[in-house]
Length: 268
Image (cartoon, rainbow, N blue to C red):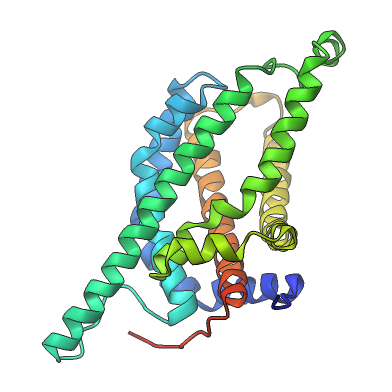
């Protein structure tokens, strides 16, 4: 198996996002606004724990972010940029545009399907786990011993399914899904994917928690009004988008290295 350096892969993702920050800011504007609007609606009108309903409300945001991340995968790996810039050769341009559109549509669709499957997965296990299990010591002590078994099954299944969460990456690159599934079968691949994901995921979450707590503590007893709440939600959505950009870039590098694919550096 090809050796993949987790630290170098994650660092390449950070460097790529920083280098393309202006390009990403332009392309992310509409997906970001769509995600903000529907996320605000979801957390306002959906009761905590109703993962399926939240997923349904977030459907337009999933499509918008899936489109954005599919384009980003193609930018990272093959140098394709949005919007498409024709070369003047109609036949060649149509062929390239068709290939690119297929990749973006497949990647976007896979991203939406994966997010819905994840929502169903968590909804299934949350049906068996008390909602206050993690926040109430009393509930944890009185919980049915069988819950520990359910939690173990959930943790193990999450570990083995984690590698497939990134299936939208090869599809965005017009790579057959069968080849990706075959390549990620070794357990070692899951550890590599988790390592890259953690290095891209954890810093943004720590920043979000730290800045949110600092902001709330600075407000003191005055609390948060509607305007400030909207600002906090927007900040949360922006950081989540950055986290997804980093994770997608890092895992895209890992996937192409695993499949033995070289980046082309094409700028079209």
